[in-house]
Image 1 (cartoon, rainbow, N blue to C red):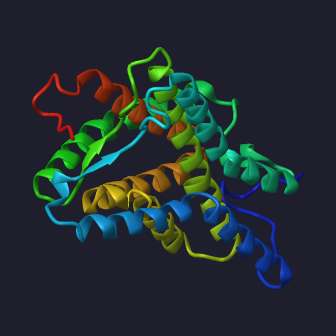
Image 2: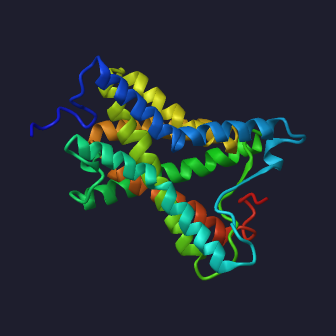
Amino acid sequence: MQAEASPVAGSFPPEGPARRILRDETLLVLALSLGASGVSALISFIGSVTKPGGLKDQAATLNASAAPGRPWLDLAWQLFGITTSLVPVLLVAHFLMREGSGLRALGFDRTRPWFDLGRGAAIAAVIGSSGIAFYLAARGLGFNLTVVPEALPEVWWKYPVLILSALQNAILEEVIVVGYLLRRLHQLGWTPGTALVASSVLRGSYHLYQGIGGFIGNMVMGVVFVYLYRRWGRVGPLVVAHSLLDIGAFVGYALLAGKVDWLPTA
């Protein structure tokens, strides 16, 4: 099989039924995953801005208990939610396998583990500190809700579930919003600039439940991630970076909430 010219290149014809099938496939994948999350976040944001009081006086809670007071049932729900959230990634892998490539076409494989880990850790270090500063500033200006990264009970599985949740977020978002979406938009004839805007706005949209700050901050992060993906041809470093950022946010909040003055709590 001939090598692809770029990490987002494809072999679909520009017109005809195959083009329509490709477009519909992309819309269905987004409707089953982060596109639907974007609509949900918009509805949540409308509810927040129309509610009496400022945004910073409201809270957006992630990783909440699904069955308070029933730890084993709660664990079952947590694992069920994490597992089923990854089904769209398996669907993407299935579609790419039909092209004869699979997720390796997006650079999500084990061929360059040290490259992915090293670059991912560097990205997380740069974005992590600036991201915290931006969040605190946006909340202080009243543009953001108070984000509560976790509200799980103090049980033995709390930290493993938080780590699994972070990994799930990273895999879902980077595979679909960067690798898959850019590949499909390229195959559909979108220009690189338009595809970058689409990917970045989509990333910002499903964080809108956090407020305007969450939308803008994640949209900027999306621009950076698209640029790095096009430079390296791999989503692997982006998955590593996103995982580390979310692990830091989830586990860091669990360890520091109520113990330091600079970290807002609900």
